[in-house]
Every structure is written in C-alpha cells, then in structure tokens.
Image 1 (tube, rainbow, N blue to C red):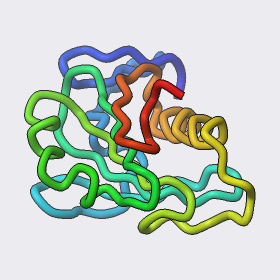
Image 2: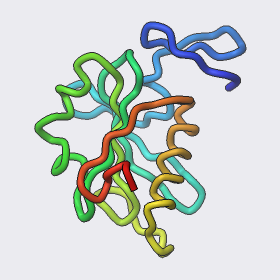
Image 3: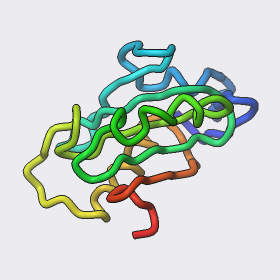
Length: 136
C-alpha cells in the first residue's frame, strides 16, 4: 500500500491514489451508516467497527468482559461526529473469539497495533475504558 498520510479525511498512498479510510478492510454495513468487519491478525480474527470520517482516527477499547455497545453505546456517535472512530472487540469479548492464548495487556496492545496496520492507519489517538485503559 505504501506510505500513508492523512489529508482532509482522505488517505493518500505512495502510488498517488486516494480513498476514504472508512472503507478500508470493511466487510459490511451497520447501524447509523458505520461499517463493521473482521481483520485476520495471525491466530486472531478481530471484530471492529468504523464510524465517522476525517480527523485523526480514534481507537476505542472496551472494558474487561465488555463489548463495543456496552462500553461506548451512548458515546460512539458523538466521538464520530468530527473524526473517524475505530471501535474494537478484544480477544474473548463480544464478536471476537478466544485464541486460547493467555490474555495480556501487551498482547491486546499488539493486536490493536496490528489492526491499525491492517487498515493502513499510521497514527491514531486511543481511548480505553476500565480494563481497556491505555495507561497500562
């Protein structure tokens, strides 16, 4: 895909083509015009949703034992009002199955980084709730 830079909600690859990041790696439509999909990241098939466009992408990480709608159901569309939001469901949560590997905070961070790479996103803000807290 080449190097990516963001300009007004558009990603530009080194090859000179451009497209909206909200369509990258996405397999289906969902509520409120958002997109949802699965990313194959090694053993893990991670569920994610993309809402909104433009701005610096924001990654939302739910709390332990939770899901996207439980942790962010009332706030997700507000976050997406002026930027792209990527909400994830971590291993053994919601629509992302368990891989059988021990679950660690480092592993969770590695999966989020791999998802961003899969989507072609070089830089993003991250917001975690409870167990998804990004200060660990």
